[in-house]
Amino acid sequence: GGMGGMPQQQMGMGGMGGMPGGMRRPRPVRYDVYEDNTPVRLQNIASKPELNGKVGFIESYQEDRGRYAVKLQDDGNVISLPPAKLQPIVRNVRLVNLENKPDLNGKTGMIVAFDEGGDRYEMQVENRIVRVPADKVRLPEDTIVTIVGIQAKPELNGQRGKIVSYDDGAGRYSVQISAEDIKNLKPANVRAN
Image (cartoon, helix red, strand yellow):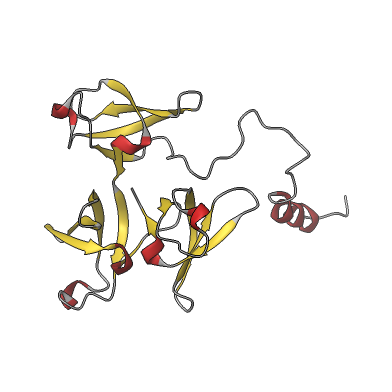
């Protein structure tokens, strides 16, 4: 055949965005759900406080219940929890613009907890725990975030989406909320929690 590889490649590139009404998939793509095997720390569990602080891994998202099946790291038990009881452990998070700890700027670590009251991430960086505000970290692509503190469009607050990219020049994340909707947001307006 005289077609070669080019048309297939072009089709592959454009095929992703052009299918909203065409082919039906059994489950629509979600931009607000943690992927299977995402490591999480359990939190805010009043009924079983002994579970707080334990680490587990997402086994699946139970769409009908709005809960996650989480396999605990220590004993292998699987429990069902809503998103508010889970703090994702986010790796490859870069620290930036820290005036009080300039030696950490540019270093990467992982988010191990989020302090709602102090509005700070607890990060493990080089074998130490540091507490930093949201605007002092750069979250990696594919991190699920919650939108907060938007004054002009308060209806966005509380929505969740997935980071597509970060634009250093504009100082904003591109966050995909749905198949058609990407919002450009300042670091202060997203939380990986």
